Amino acid sequence: MKKWFIVLLGIIFVSIIIYLIEEVENSEINEICFEENCFSLEISDTPEKRARGLMFRENLCDDCGMLFVYDEEINSKFWMKNMLIPLDIIWLDSDLKVIHVANAVPCVMEECEIYGLELEKSRYVLEVNFGVSERIGLGEGSDLEFVYGN
Image (cartoon, rainbow, N blue to C red; front, side, top):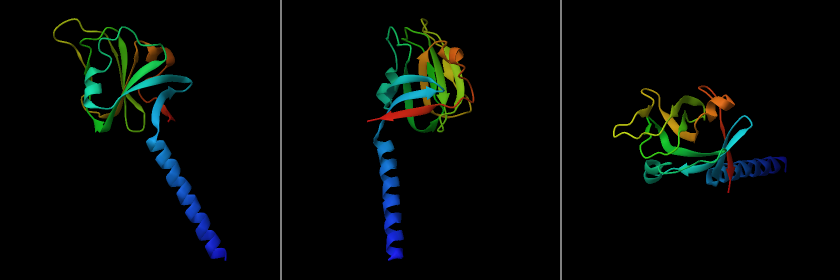
């Protein structure tokens, strides 16, 4: 009797863990937070969305951002052509640790500055309003976390 009870508890425990993992994987990322500072996110997770990004936008709310999501860590570079607002561009590894921050301004010339990393790879890139990272103390080595919802 005890063996069946232990086996049953084990099956229930494993089932709960699998359910919780699937819930997180099937949930959408709603926000990303650094300490008490959270940003509502627009997700750019397709080539088309990543190519357009925040181009032609006239503003970005104070607690909003765009998160570029890649299937794996890559060497990603950004430019500010067709941008109307200055941004902080924040590169994150798979563990949501900041590996680089760039303060980027709109480009009005034909050849624009390229922002990115030469050697390090990132899994995510977060764009927020210019100066936010400095104001909240977010820099290389900072840890962020996702807030999920359905």
